[in-house]
Length: 96
Ligand SMILES: [Zn+2]
Image 1 (cartoon, rainbow, N blue to C red):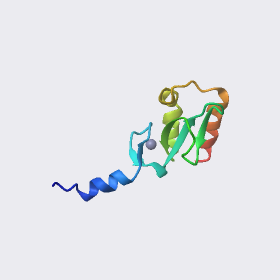
Image 2: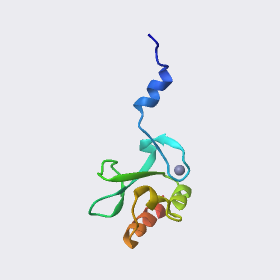
Image 3: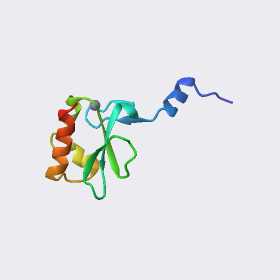
């Protein structure tokens, strides 16, 4: 029986996500989740537990600039931002 290497096991037990801006794969907790909710629009999900289609960005202004530029985030979330959605994300970025 072939043993899996220990590094494989570590990767498997740490949830990882890809930042949609810089494409780096990082542990989920190091990224910020953005969710398209059914009735509250697009929100930053601090708990990581909100239901809805999500996207991840690093906690780095650079990545938020990139993600909010053009329609990359909208494309990933399969939505079109309303003014308030964009404002909410811009506000969050301002605090990073
Ligand atoms: Zn990033």
